[in-house]
Image (cartoon, rainbow, N blue to C red):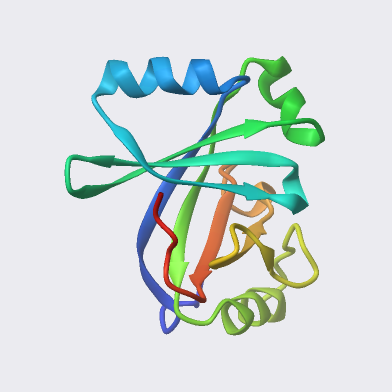
Length: 142
């Protein structure tokens, strides 16, 4: 795609679930625990980032309070996106747009208060929604 100079690592897989209880059931099933939580105003959703013991886990649970994500997969939820961490989200966004790609947002938006995000429209990646995220402040862990 041409954003190699911005890409750092895979950050997480985002999974939409209809309730916090459903997220906790899946967490128990796969043996992860809460690392930290947040709220994303732009998408009206609570977030739970997970960990395995002391280690980060690349799984994020998204629990919509309303909005477009509440209807994701007919309200049942499912795997929503993969997230790539970048070191300059504005630069990566501009580079993708200059190559003719479209993003969900005109400008990156606040994810949690310490991360800004944008999404490559899935029509450019065989139906997979790809999130770009840049950490802009230390993560506030619970």
